[in-house]
Length: 74
Image (cartoon, rainbow, N blue to C red; front, side):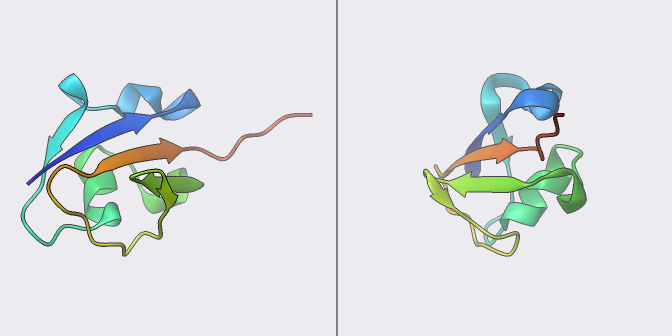
């Protein structure tokens, strides 16, 4: 299956070529993160099809992921 991925802010370099990642059927958010070289600890928020999702959320062909880091400031 193919999912569209957009990484934001400091994670933007992890957005896959063409914005698409191929995963085996039954893949999860965590599998997608691993597939683009990110650990769950690197990520603060994930949205699947514009809805907040947990790391164990299952993905389906055509889903869209938005991946955001923790934002620091001061």
